[in-house]
Length: 99
Image (cartoon, rainbow, N blue to C red; front, top):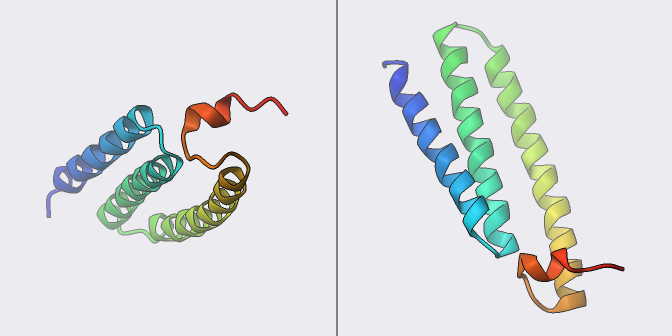
């Protein structure tokens, strides 16, 4: 497989993630966009790891997946607490909290 094909897919995934992160106002959509960007980075790690016949990229992907799982758990707990407090998932409402 050519090196440029997975890198183009990763660039497209990362661009979609960044665009969604900038355009969305819903906290769940923002979290999904962050996960999409992390998956694009994982694809780049695996691509170069396979190209250079090395396992460091695969190990890094495992660490990033573990980090993403922890981030998702903590972020969802925070979102649930904010939703109970404000009863909305709009990011602009959370940005105005001054407590």
